[in-house]
Length: 124
Image (tube, rainbow, N blue to C red; front, side, top):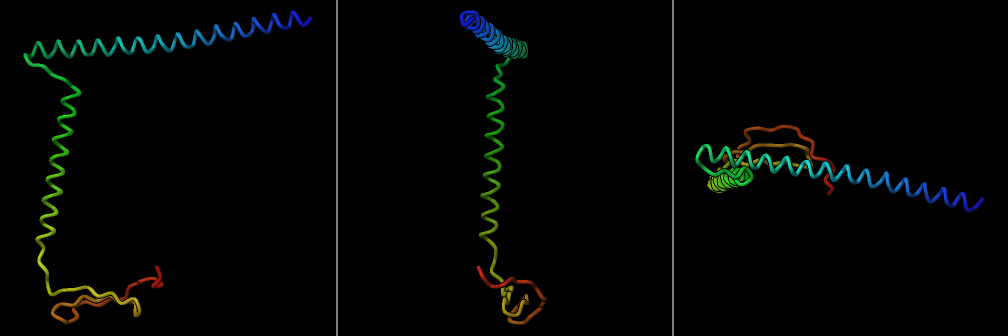
């Protein structure tokens, strides 16, 4: 009896192994087809580039576009920093009193606006 159970168990493991090998083979087949599809797309890109008379690298083009956009953003940030640095000091100031929960705007030592505000408990 033990011999038969061992024999059947071995066949069961063999069947599971065959099933697992089939799943792995199917996954590799998908990978191989995807690779073949990518090679076809690259060939088509090269044929279009030859037909139009120039060479094109789609990934490099995308990287170049992103690099140019990044450079434009960096220059815009620098321009904004310069504008912030060039701001002129005025005689106007905002005063917030946490003891009185009041906000006031003063110009030339005269209060031009006052309002009640919430400033919290005064703890950090």
